[in-house]
Image 1 (cartoon, helix red, strand yellow):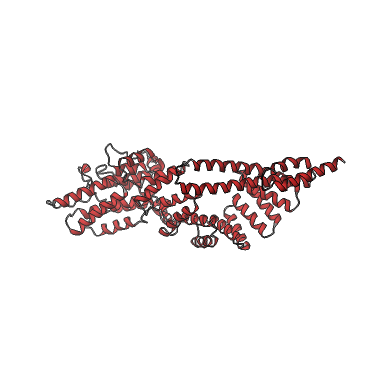
Image 2 (cartoon, one colour; image 1 turned 90 degrees about the vertical axis):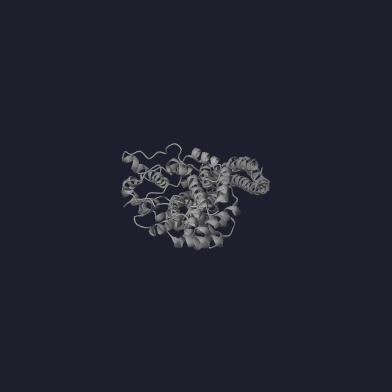
Length: 529
C-alpha cells in the first residue's frame, strides 16, 4: 500500500519533500484568483490552529472551493481535514464515525494512486472517548485493536517519511505512538517527539495521550487560543477526578457552550450534578445524552438513578427494561436498580427476582445485600432479612467502610425475633455511625454555603442538606433508644440508662426516652427492694 502524501496545509510547513514511492502531488491552478488564494490560506491557518470548530470551519471552506472548481487542491485538502476530524471524533467521543466515513467515500472518488488506507486503519484503531459513545461503538474497536498489534510497525514506516512537514502524517504518527506506546517501547523505538515550533494541532494531540495527559500543556494551549474549547472537556474530567466539582462544572459548561453536541461533556456534567445532589439538573443532562447517543449505558444508568431519587419509579423501570434488552453491560446494576424501584412500587416478588439476579453478578456488594434485606422484610421473611443485613455489614466493613442503615436494620430484625443480646451491640454501633454521618453532612453543607454557586441553586442544595442532617440525627437518637430498650428487655438497667439519656436529647425521641428512663428507675428500685 502506498500512503498518499498530504498537500501542505500550513504555510510554515510547506517545504516538505515527497517520499519515494508516494503519490505525486496534484498541480494547483497556477493563477488562482486573489479571493481563492486568501480562502485557502485562511483554511490552512484554521487547520494549523487545530481546534474542533477550526477544523469544521476549514472543511467548509475547502468544500465550497471544491464545489465551485475554483481551487483543484481544495478537494484533497477537504479529505485531509476529514481524516483529522476522524481522529478528533474518537478523541472526543463525537460524531459516531461520520468524518471517517466521509473521508473514505471522497478518497475513493479521487484518481489512482490516491490512497488513504493507512490513515483509515490507524483511525479505526484509536480508542473512542467512552463517555460520548455507546458500548456497542466501543466494542467495534476490538478487531481494529488486534490489527494494530500486528501492523503498527508497517503503519509507522509508511508515516515517517515527510514528518514533521506533513501535518496529517505527523498527527497520525502521534496518535499511533500514543495508542501503541507499549509496543513501540518494547521494540526499542523512541516515540516521535514534537520539534520546536509545531502548530497547536500537533501540540494538542501530544497533550491528550491518555497515558500521559499533560494538563499544563492543555491549559497553555487554551490560554493562547480560547477557541480550543474541547480542552475544557479534558480539564473538566481531570477536575472531577480530583474532587473539585465546581471547577469541573465550569470547564464542562464552557465546552458545551462551544460544542453543544459534545455528549462526553454533558454526561460528565450529569455525574457532577448527581454528586452535588442537584437531581433535576442531572436528569436533564443524562436524558439529553440518551436522546443523542442511544445505548450510552452510563447515561441510561444515570437517568435511572435520577428518576429513582425523584420517585419516578415506573419511568426508571422502563429504561432498565431497555438496558436488559440491550444486554451485556452493567447487568448487575440493571437488576439492582430495577429491584430498588420495584421495591418502592410494592412489587415485592418481582423485586426479589431482580435482587437475586443482581447478586449473581455482584456477589460481594453490600448494597445488594442491604436491598435484599429490605425486600425480605417486605415479604415478611424476617430471618432471611437478618442474614441479608448481616452480609451487608460484613461486606461493607470488609472493605473498610461502614453502613449505618444496614447495621441499624440488622438490629431491628433481631428485635423482631426478640434477640435482645444480639440487637443491642448493633444499635450501639449504629448510633456513632449516624453521628459521624451527620457531621460529614454538616461539613458538606458548609462547603456549599461558602461556594460561588448561584443563590437559588445554593438555597436548594442547602435545604436538601438540612433535611439529610435532620434525618441522620433522628436515626442516631433512634439507635440509642433501641440500644437502651434492648438492654432493658434483658434486664440490664445499668447498661440501658446512658443510651436512654442520649436518646432523650432529641426532641422527637424525648417523650419515649423519658418514659423508658422512668421504667429503668422503677426496675432499679424493684431490684433494691
